[in-house]
Length: 352
Image (cartoon, rainbow, N blue to C red; front, side, top):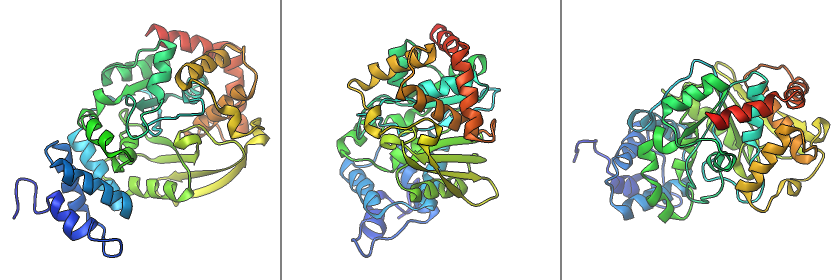
């Protein structure tokens, strides 16, 4: 029987569609997926039923039509945006963070912003399932304000070229699922769709993947979504699922609206990253990442972390097509580090 949402309560979707068995489980159509997430964001589903639904979706794997529907409902029911006048690159790394390697996106984003490419980063606060270190925690350790309204975040971007958006402020209903997600103990589709929240209404999205198939799914999700609005997506193989490029032979996926997804391989040693993944591991991810950020921007650090920051900054410049090649991007990044522009920008952000 239909209710205020429709005819597909989560229990019925579990029984008849997504959780009917390893061989018989099926995909939802767009309207079923929309209704499911509307019910979830109403914060009233039975907790056992919700957990079963999330787990069934994890096992069967969501297709882009379902994910696109989830994204659209998130935009309609939870997301509060504030678009800056600048046209930034949206950096939506996995919100549940990193546990071993340094978070380099803050340093890379500040360098890219100093070189003329506006950057937006966003995250929550120890988001399940990993509850590890994300953008917010590195910025906190640097003394940069993070618990901002979306409007203040947009002003930060316009004044300084770099801005942080805080999930509880711009995506509050999704944030309210924190406890339920924590009780799951594993990632759910919410971990995927929240990275596409795009709180600054940017036209360019930068993300990461472990397997190329995930980049393909994300691009198809953007295509399926009626609200995502990205005109260009750049993704690469990242460390711990984060938007820090993996050393070595690394795949980059590139998509522009109206075209097919393209991919190419870069050898990071050719761009100065001639070291192993383990060389980017740290003891205290938040504190050490903050120290690395300060030391790279001040020019005091000239080791593998500086090399990695320059390449990651170059990818951000390339994402918005402000440079034609990574070599040009690295040159621009080196220039703003060497002349003190990047360090001065960090000081401005700390004073914001």
